[in-house]
Each structure stands twice: as C-alpha cells, then as structure tokens.
Amino acid sequence: MPHANSDAQLRISEIFFSLQGETSRIGLPTVFIRLTGCPLRCTYCDTTYAFTGGQNMGVAEILRQVAEHSPRYVTVTGGEPLAQKDCLPLLRALCDAGYEVSLETGGALDIGEVDARVMRVVDIKTPASGEAEKNRWENLPLLTPHDEIKFVLCDENDYQWAKQILLQHRLAEKCAVLFSPAHGTLNAAQLAEWILRDRLPVRMLLQLHKLLWNNVPGH
Image (cartoon, rainbow, N blue to C red; front, side, top):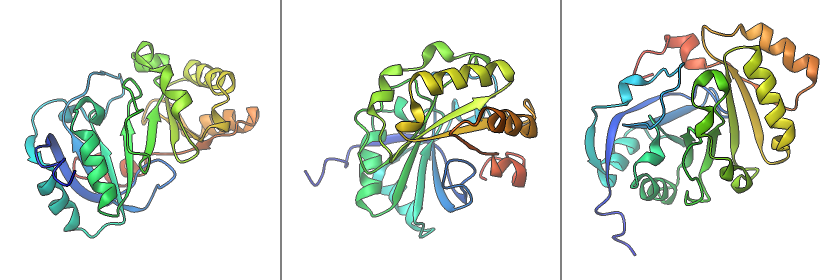
C-alpha cells in the first residue's frame, strides 16, 4: 500500500542531531525524533517538557527534516512514542528509508506491532521510579537479540530488585541488558562495584548527553 503513511500525523516535541547518549549505540551521531506525551510520571524524568506542547507533523515532513542531517542512525523517543498510534507507520517509513532505527519506550505499552527492523530499547521501571506497577511483562517474551532492556537505578533497593528481575526472567539470554544510575541520585562508582561484586551479565552505562551538555533540550 504505497500511500499507507500519507495520513499519519504525529505530535512532535523536537527533532535534533546529537550523539546517542545511552544504549549500545552510545556515542554515535544520531537524529532524535522526540514525540510529545507520556502516560508515565517517573520520579527521575528528564524530559518533562515533552509531556505537552509540540507541533503536528506528517511523516513526509519528519523524513525531510531527518534527511537534512544525512544520518545513519535515527532514534524515536519521547515522552512515550508508542502512546501515539502513528508512531508505528513512522518507524516503518524510517526503516524503509534505509536508516538504522531504534525506539526508546518506557515499557508500559505493547511493543508487539513495532517493525521487526527496529531496535526496541525497553525500560523496566524500578520501584523508585514510582511506576513499577505499569511494567508490561508481556513484552519480555517478544524481545529478540536485536533489542535491549534498560534499568534506570536510583538506590540499592532498585539494584537488588533489578538483579532479581534479571535472574528470574533470564533477561541476559534474551538480549543486551543495560544498567544506568539515575543522574545525580545514585553514585556511578557504587553501581559499578555492585555489578562487579555480583558478576552480573549487564552493561553499565552513564548518560553521555548529561555529561556533555547537562541535559539541555536539543542535545
């Protein structure tokens, strides 16, 4: 259906070119498409400005703005991108255009309809996030080695909880698992020591964009 995406409209908070700040593609030049709106209210959220506002854009205009940067990598993020139904045709269109596409999702919504070419980076919300009860555990069997799971940890209780989930669901056998300290909340060196002590099969990441630009929007 060549015109399947012609009516797709999305509420866009911002489109910008920066370095990937997290995931296994950290440090790679990437175009970010930030969608407006999110059903979650995590305690450590650093993109509250994307809860509201933004502007309506069609897929063709989004693709035009992305192409201006001639990127290899494109990340669709939020807010919560899957809260907008037309996120799915946008992801398909980006893949069709030849980009290596990743989706950053909070893990509360169904990832099953996302184009298989997309790297799905799925959060599992910890107790200190305030949104752990919203985790959609049905997403876990859908994950493939192409995807990634991310835990943002605020304290030792979060770490112990995440370790239990990691082992209980054998997450490291499904895909890469990322542990990140909540910026300014959990000491990064302390988290590193816990991971080494327990020999966890995870990758620890710091948020590069915060180290470089202190989380200024547009970076």
